[in-house]
Length: 301
Image (tube, rainbow, N blue to C red; front, side, top):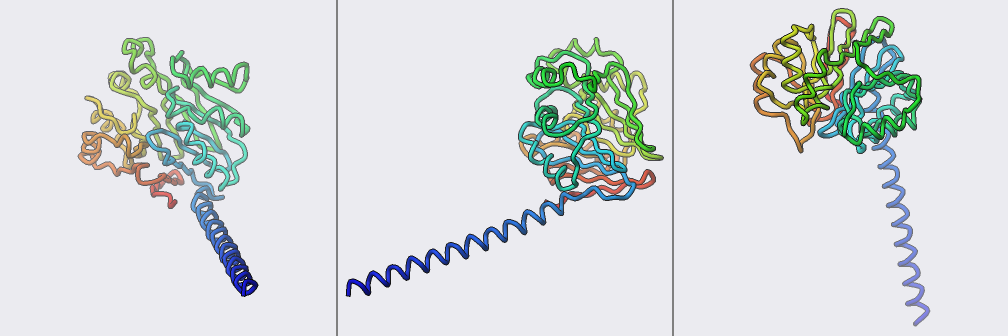
């Protein structure tokens, strides 16, 4: 009798172990399929000659990957938490080295993953804004790249040329005036980047705010572009609408998260100017252009 009960218990335990093993295998298979599908979705950089810009969904932060004819670059690196998202795209597209990295300014939501990326990947050229910041991102990054000859601190406009693609890296023309507002020094010292391919222009603005925008408008700087990365995560200033009108883009991308959505006045200004708006709150934004046409869509996660 006791032997029969023992045998029944043993059979039950074996059955449970088999069910657990089968369940584990099914979970592993489903997870692998999910990971494979996710990796395929991140394979956004093709082998054609188009410019591809991926504004990554990294919360209230900025990070964009640029690809053109085998050259890869980054404009900003989000927070430290953004590293995993950046690496997913790099791995999915078999990017093993980064030709250029541009840090617009030293706030943690723009420079957070820079040190880790520099340690993991071969970054051939690093462009930094030329000012001293009190933010921790400044001291950490400068310590990491001390003595590196491939680092350029941009005090005057720089231009990169990649097989017909040009990238102008634009510091402020009057930096001394921007230091009067100590709370907004980092944002207003942002490097802007104008990317040009044939007849199309793409403007990255970092986190520029009212005083820097006023300088740009007063000096009548050439900021006209077909595509715009909206300044400061969609924040609104008294001259935001004037700036949007000066750029006059067809498309605008807002890089931000649900914890800090774009301001309603900014969204209203975009709508009044008939500018098509995309936001990384809805997912990573993929822009593709051959220099004559532009398409913008969301990356499937």
